[in-house]
Length: 220
Picture: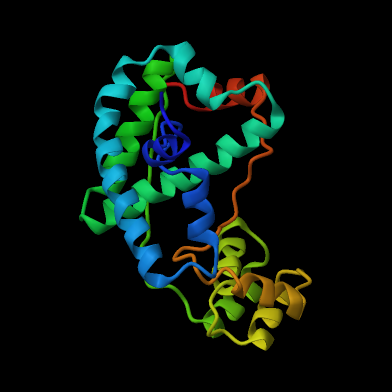
């Protein structure tokens, strides 16, 4: 018979248990305990990543669909947000090991599309550079207005505790967003996290008409 403690130790449902998740987000968890837990999860993640070389080519279409297209809108939202975090982690990892980012992403999209029964012509062009300062971002936000890029940068600065509230509010006003001091304080309380939450658009729908238009515009 498996005890509750054994179930917690082996966390068969995922990389981390519910208790471990709570510890990582709990500001009262000691730095020593937090770092030890992070190291354990990192080891599990390394092994899980290698498993994808077996999991992706061997799971059936219905197996993958059951994970990424669950039977409730709430679960779909959770999966889409988690998928974006997973993609961000993969890209972060490729940046750290000097991988060929554009080629890797392009090949992955094309290979997945073929398995899905479609052909996608992918052209990626990535422009890399340092993050702007808050002052530079205010100028950018004032010139460009609201977009996915400026929203993501605004959220990044929101969680940076060394950025003044006045500068944050000024940047938000450039994007016609109403930030209060309470919003900023609440974000700063996420201190235990190394990487803060970033925007994930989950309520999206692709219609058959959009697919047809895309196909028409990309004929060989």
